[in-house]
Length: 350
Image (cartoon, rainbow, N blue to C red; front, top):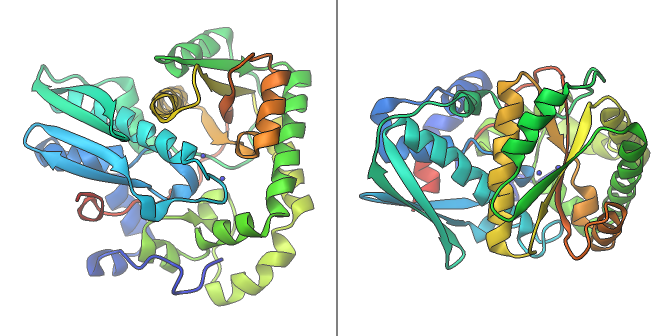
């Protein structure tokens, strides 16, 4: 769900142990397989492996004897790109979906409910269940790269349709090249609008991590190598950024990336409110895990959703009536990229 920061702007919350790790060690620790002995803390760790906007990880977990609550971390809001916290609640929904699969694997069946702007998960004992989606969690990533351009089968599209639908949430799968090109125009227009917005650009830059050292120091944000770009020392990357991160270059990149994709998925909720955004997140995460389980990649191209005027225009183009699009994702077969990182469980449990 797409950053240059001063040392003060970067969030120095990683522990001394995390800061001492190499990037490769941090990746192994972050994406380690589920540990049966980890209890509720391990369920939280797996929940944090979910997709989230700008890798801000905008969540706080409260762990009870038989429950976990997931609430927004307002210190990690992005008011320029996400003024109404739409992406925050989608991110919480993604985390809740991961939590569900991890809990079932540890013999706990969660009952989820949304109240007071938080997701409450209450657990009861059950037989352990390990699904293909659980196995996909440590391999999932939002892969911002050019794909191979090959179509996917009708059977796989059906799998996507089942995974990406939810309570009050529908998924539209677009594989027609003409329609994909039309949606691409909305993506490019949205990207142009955002890159001309100084507030948006300043906010994005605070979440950019140019080097492995910066990525490990914060364990969050948009690490350059995870987006297919080279890692460089911050002192070199920051002055170069205006010359390499350009409106035209990014628009050309988005056109090439969507053209190389097998299709687009648009998630649409019945109502535009926090409870439905959570369900959009759960559906999105199921879609992402299903794609991963099938050996495919995906990436967000959410610009038309993030610019209010374009969101309404895209809704009209897709004939959504009174509904609005919530997420736009491209999918297809593509390469593996370096992984993003996650903060330790000790930093997200309150």
